[in-house]
Length: 213
Image (cartoon, rainbow, N blue to C red):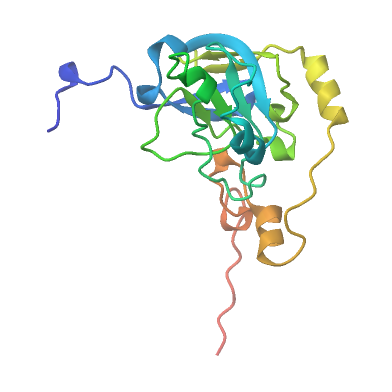
């Protein structure tokens, strides 16, 4: 059934693009799957430095978090995973579920299935693996999500963000040869489609190959 405009299920479209000092090139949130009370939210971050750390600790009953905590996961973007894996739907921690908390703000540079739900911010760009601001978020930092304002903001002074970034040590590449290296060298960020840069024309002129007899 196709509804009329005045009978729409939602006043706006399902997906919003966020901007801010935590995602200079954008991030994505499916607002129709988010909890309304979390769409304007500020809370302290709890950071997972990798998908594996999140996987191994998410159900720990001594995880130091509460209903206001913003879960942040790094290292899951096009280069970090590598491959932009569907890891963005961070499971709700068991310790919160047992307190009757069914949703919390979750942020990562990963993606997720279109059937997933919750207040989940995805596609943070540039990704943490290449030194995007997500890389410098520390547990305890305040983070604000404003869906109405289309904002994702890290409450850390710019000079402190730069200081942390200067101390960051790049992770060793997943691949040093073959297709894996080609992928890491040429894959673009989420806001550019996670495509190979050499497949994007942009402002470049393609020189025709002379015909041969």
